[in-house]
Image (cartoon, rainbow, N blue to C red):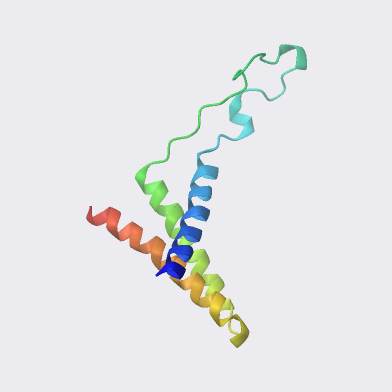
Length: 106
């Protein structure tokens, strides 16, 4: 059971990072492009930009993409020496897909 938890934690961490990256605002949208240094905002938090809010559909698409990426990588690992890594990637994908299934049911 412990090994499965590590696999799930690994899958969830990388997927949360992907979601975090998707919420980031591109620099061009932050409103500082082409601004001279002396015109730039000053003070704590002056350069902070509000993060994007992802819809449920966008979150589901990112999670599906992360699962698909793992399944594709597992399919490429055909050598017997990589069997453990391929199995781990398939398990990670199943963990992510299970979360999507539970979100739809719940």
